[in-house]
Image 1: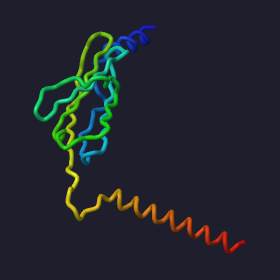
Image 2: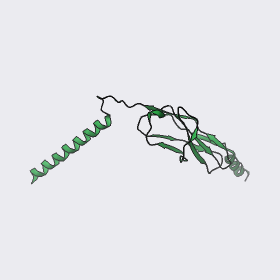
Image 3: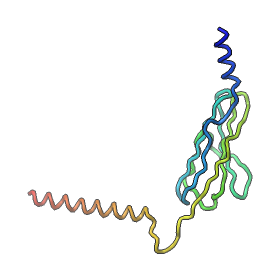
Image 4: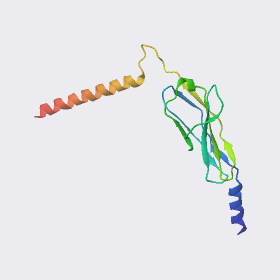
Length: 144
């Protein structure tokens, strides 16, 4: 009936938009960063393209980043202040840009006396497993 048609037309003319925008991130140098955005409306299928604007540069497409999630394996201090956005083009050739997410890269301390917490925890974990192993060995010897 008429109701069905209006529903279909309404869905088809709904504007292409981003119900989920990429969020700003603050991460320590050397760690990973993940940006995500979701598009809706317009006509599927969508074509995605992540774009990057480094502190001293213009917007550029990031080669190969054509999904709804952008994963940067390891951020570097010179990426501090970079901006990321997702461009989405729908089947009607309409293109929308997401908001610009800002990447803040925190410096990792390089002082001689501060041990990175990860090494410290790894050391504790190793000590615990060695002590646990020795304890088990002792129990076995007593049992025999």
